Amino acid sequence: MTPRISGARLLETLERLAAFGGRPDGGVDRVAGSVEDLRARAWLAGQLRARGLVSWTDETGNVFGHTPNVRGGRLLVGSHTDTVPAGGRLDGAYGVMAALEALTTLHEQGHPAADSLEIVSFWDEEGAQPESSGGMVGSTALCAGPHLADLSAFVELHIEQGPRMELAGQELCVVDGIVGVDRHLIRVVGEANHAGTTPFSLRRDAGRVLARATAGAHDLMRSVSDTLVGNIGSLTLDPGAPNVIPGAAQLVLELRSPDEDVLTRCADLVLQHARAVAAEDGCTIEHWMLSHKPVVAFDEGIRTLLEKVCRSTGRPAGSLYSYAGHDAGVLSAHVPTAMVFVPSTRGVSHSPHEHTDDRLLTQGAQVLLEAVIAHHDSR
Ligand SMILES: [Zn+2]
Image: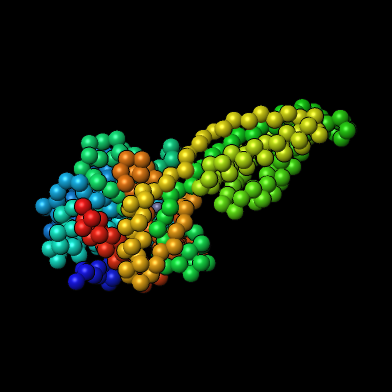
């Protein structure tokens, strides 16, 4: 008989975790390093010990749990318990509470897979503090430290944080990988001049070029590939005064796609278009690539194992790329790694309105437990 997780206990621990930094609107404020985050970590360690399990915290702040008889070559399962400001109660928290529930169930039933499992709540996944360099702090530290040698694989269960599964009627998805993310700075150079005395025909207006380049970039991004999303979230005019024609202007373009060729092609098209509209106004374009995060492809063996487990529960998994970053993206460079998603109601995340039906949360945690057993049996 396959052990069954307790859905009631899972939902109750999720509820109790959500009380740390809980907001009246149902959301959670538990930014990494805050008092609420530290209290939640201490509570998790206490929960582990109360269930007859061992908990330990590394020097970074990652909280781990396992049975007293844990062996080497452990499957690591978990996510993060920090949130963005005014975040939801499921992002990260669900993956950690489901891991706790799976470990507890296997331990209670004396199942041999319990001793090859370790669970984790990573430190600072979100990178939500103003001084942050971008999150994934705990998982990055783990991968640079000695404990990595004790691990054979990593599985992260998470809410989708987007609308695609709900729209497709999918209850489970095995994640193919994480999209690549490129950021470009595009700067228009024109000539600052008096906004009253300079006729339109003699202006080299960097602001006008920036506006046209921005509008054109959106059309190009939508036309280049269905797999691409992009954003222009920062526009600057220099000097930025009502009576001065902008002498320079810049935008930051962020592009995401599971296909790196698409990222390159789109950036080239946007630049070409910007140069063309700049030339019409006597301006020039300068370009810097600010950052490049390559596409992450998750491990085929772990993905196949997760697909089999989903199929055996009678809920065949779909597949998709994650357009958000996760600790699993960091781990996958070091150990075989994959993720499972459950749907997010209306695709809302990083918001107090984050929601997934209890039935789907319970089903996802059961899949996680069965994946732990299948991984144990495969070794
Ligand atoms: Zn998350």
